[in-house]
Length: 126
Image (cartoon, rainbow, N blue to C red):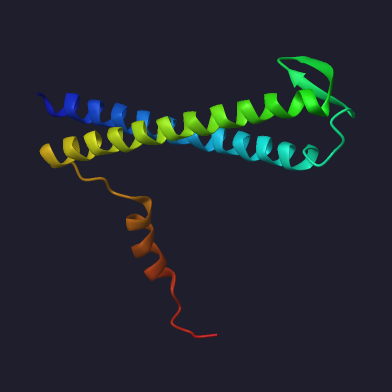
C-alpha cells in the first residue's frame, strides 16, 4: 500500500472513531434528559395531565401513560450507548493495530505548544 493511501485510510479510521464518540456523547445527554424527566414526573399523580413531544407534535397524555414510554426510550438509549461503546472499543483497537503495523506517529498540538510556552516564560515567580 502506498504511504498516502495508508495515511488516508488512517485518517478515515480516526474520523469514524471521532464521529462515533460524538454520537455516544449526544446519546448520553439524551439519556440524562430522559432520566431527569422520569425522576421529575414519577412521584406525581398518575392521572395528572402532562405533555410529551412525539416527533414535532406536542401530545397531551397523563403521567401514568407517559412514564412507561419515557422509561422505554431511556432503556433503549442506554442499550444503544452500550452497543456503540463496544463498537467504539473495537474500532479503536483496529485503528491502533493499523497505526502500529504502519508505524504511524501523530504529533499533538500539545507537543508543539510546549516549546512555545517554554520560550514565553519570563523566569519570574509570582
